[in-house]
Length: 124
Image 1 (spheres, rainbow, N blue to C red):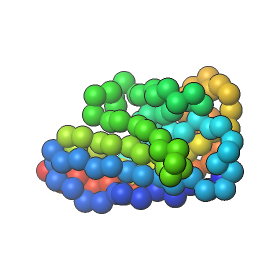
Image 2 (image 1 turned 180 degrees about the horizontal axis):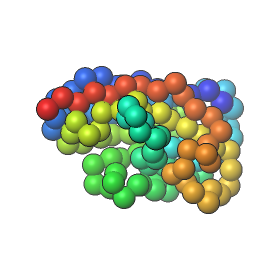
Image 3 (image 1 turned 30 degrees about the vertical axis):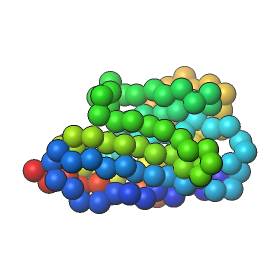
Image 4 (image 1 turned 135 degrees about the vertical axis):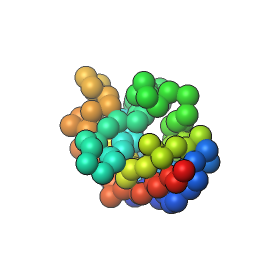
């Protein structure tokens, strides 16, 4: 499967963005589908994921402002981010894992397929 993100950009603090990730190729396979982000000088961190049954799981720091969803008609994974702050500035990546279960659903090591990322920059 191939993943391609879009929707990033430069926004002011307090605004909202919706990131998208299109899945192409082996879309008939069931995947865990996740969003990660990596700020300059920091490790890549998990934001949210959907398990193979479509249930969402969020990092504690993401609860309340982030919403992950999947449009199966368009094979597109979305991440809505509300009330953006400069601390949300990062490269955002989508990822997929063709597994029934993940022991650490928000760990990058669990995911096999990655997009190239889309940059989000939030100014104060």
